[in-house]
Picture 1: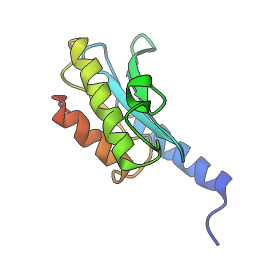
Picture 2 (picture 1 turned 180 degrees about the vertical axis):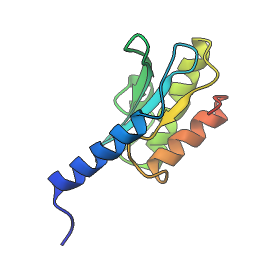
Picture 3 (picture 1 turned 90 degrees about the horizontal axis):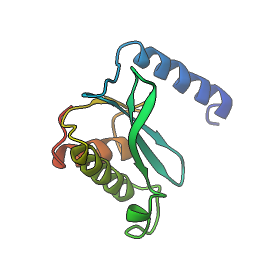
Picture 4 (picture 1 turned 30 degrees about the vertical axis):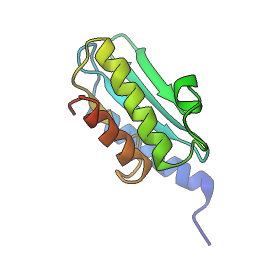
Length: 123
């Protein structure tokens, strides 16, 4: 049997709190945080100084949704990463702090990060 879902969620939240102690987003170098559900993938760029979201995208965004069949796979995550990179560059942001939110750096999280790097964003 697998791990209890509530325990799994608590462990992920604990890892994320530990990560948040180390990384901090500013207006010039925002913290880009990812969230993944079974069906969708979400990315937000956050300015922690002011406590605001600068930009974001997900598989529910119209630009992405029309180009994908399913939002819970690596191809969809890459499209979201491309869109976020484009939006960040439009706002004049070239460099970010990548917050994987306690998720392992593989699969959808990695595809999104690599797509943002291809889009001209530096980590």
